[in-house]
Image (tube, rainbow over all chains, first blue to last red; front, side, top):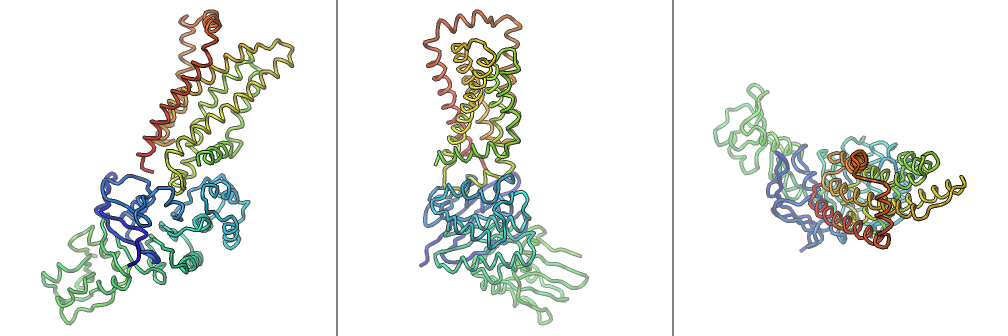
Length: 290
Length: 215
C-alpha cells in the first residue's frame, strides 16, 4: 500500500460565517490530486491548514506519514505556489537566493538560476515589476529550488494566459517523473487537470462532495437533459436542477439513471458539470429557473 | 536558524534604504543642530521605537507571514529573531549617534562629558526596550494594520509624560543628576536587568500570541 503524503481527518474550522466541515482526504505518494470547487468553497482554507497557518477547531492534518504541518522537517519538503506571490515587491528576484534560500538546507542555487533563465525572468528585476504570469513562474522557481517531495498549488493558473498555463502544466509533469513526488493542485480551471490529475477532490461549501479517481468521478456522475415530466423520485435525484421553459437539465449519480424515461438524454458529466451542479444544488436545493 | 532570521530581518529593514534613511539621518545630524548634543542619542530611542513597526508593515506589504509559514523554522524562532534584529539595529544606531555626538563635541572644541553620554545611552536603551516590549506583542498578535496605532503610542506617552512631568515640576534636572550620580554603580546593572526583564516578558507574550494567530 502506498504511504500517504497528505492525510486530513475530520478537519473542521469556523471562520466568520464560513465553516470547513469534517474534511477528510488522503493523497498517496506519487500521485496528483486536483482540488476543485467554486470560489469560497474552502480550498484555500484547507490549504492553509496543510501549511499550519491556523489551528483548526478539530480534526488533524498529517504530512509525510505523521508529521505535523508547519514543522521545520515538513516545510523543508514542501514547495508552495499560491495565487499571489508572498515576497516583498521591493526585493530583487536574484536576492531570493540569500533572502529565502538561506533558510532551506536543500536550496539549489543553480537550479533556481536555471528556472529563472527558463522562465526568462531577470535576476535584477524587482519582484513588484513582474507580470502576474512571471510572478507565478517565480513562485514555482522558489518552490522547486529546494527540491520538495510535495507541491501544494493554490489556484496558480487563475489569470494566466493559455500559453503560461500550458508551460506550468509541462513543468508539473516533469516534476512528477520522480515517483516519490506528489502534487495537490487547487484550481477552478478544471481543464488544467485533464492530463495531469490522478485523483480529484471536489469541495463545496466547506464539505467534500467527491473524493476519488478522476475516472470514478466521470463514472459516478452523469448529466440529464429532457423535456418529460419528472417523477418525484427522479426530481429528488437531480443535483442543481435547471429549467428553461419545458426543458430541464441537471446532474445525477449514475445509479439514478433507471429513474428517467426513454426520452431523457443521459450524457457523461465533465468535471466542470459536477462542480457547477453540486454548487448550484448547495445554494438552491430545489431547482434553478431561467 | 534564529541568526538567519536576524540577518533576513535586518536586510529587509534597510530595503529600500529611502524608507529609513531620513530618520537615521535625523539621528546623525541632531547632535550638530540641537542645543544639547546628547539629544542625538536620545532621539535614537524615539526614532527606533517609531521604526519598530516597519518590519510588520513590510510583512503585510509582501505577505511575508505566508512566506514564514513555508519556511523550515518555527514561529517562536521568528519572534525571537525579530526582537534580536530590532535590538541589534537599535545598538547600531545608538553607536552611530554616540560617534556623531563625540565628533560634534570634539570638532566644536567642547569638553567631552563621557559620564553624561553614558547616562543618556542607558536611559535611551531603557526607553527603547520598554517601547519595544509594549509594542511588539500587539504587532505579533494583530498584524501591522490593526495594531498600527502602537507605532506612536509608547513614544507619545513617553515624550508627553516627560514634558508634563517637567511642567508640573515633578522632574528637576539637578535632583535627577544628583540621584543618578549617587547611584551610578547600580545604574547599568539595574537598567540592563529592567531591559532584559521587559524584553523577555514581551518575547514570551509575543510568541504565545503569534503561535495562535491565524495567518
